[in-house]
Length: 384
Ligand SMILES: *Cc1c(COP(=O)(O)O)cnc(C)c1O
Image (cartoon, rainbow, N blue to C red; front, top):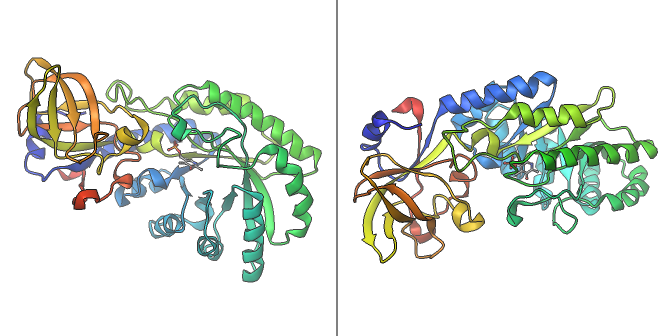
């Protein structure tokens, strides 16, 4: 992704900063469009992955909707020009104010995560004289084969309703006058790189649909969530996830009823690879078995290594010397503030620039000002 032109231009920009390739984002969205939207699928972009204005602008132009997990995200999506009908609102802990805001905005769907939430939504909607479209989030109990912190579809997870509790919901439904149960929703986890969990999900959805039909409930839409992963090891080898294979899983395995819509909520797979965290090397410290490259970026900019033991690929942009072994670390007073340990990189000197790759999703949005650090700036490819 990077050449000498980038290294040259980056030298004049204050580090650390997030760099986004709009060209790669564009090409990624084209694949989503070609293999997903063209099949009639409704694809919502999970705005929590990255909410930068120019990224939202491209996502909107490509015809995607938005998946929100907070009232502020709904506000952001609306101000970015998405229509209320394009907005789904998920989240295990929606406040009354957020629910009210979603109702006032007439959003497409509330993805509800518990029976109590549906009852509260009914009450707030009734008082507002509205009817809320609800998708109930169900736990398909599918093993997502990813990090435990980003597995969400198992029985013992805080997210979603256990399908065994559905009959309780069915009994309550006739009295919930302000609830229009329009769909079912699933999201089994994140950074799922194998297709099998999605095949398992599609089959579970089929069985759950049968169960709804047995209870004479017709659903307008099925939302299978997101979670498709990216290649963190080889961002240049696989800059765009294989969306053809992903959407084909659902095309092949999901049984759709007449007139039923299928919705997706993709975050990481859309924006993950287009972003990099660019940082300057402050110091080199020679250790006994490794060398430490201390960067001016740390867990405050990119918390994924500390939070999920994620390994991001590191490019040294300004050295082509023979390789040496490095631990690449940040400046924060936490031992977990380490990007990589024991990796071979071209010899690094103070002042060299590095790119921490695949930082477009859950990077900048999760940054903090811990240690009173300044927020990293945003730089787009067409600005340099
Ligand atoms: C986070 C989230 C997504 C997006 O997940 P990705 O792994 O980024 O695709 C989709 N749906 C829900 C409900 C989420 O919480």
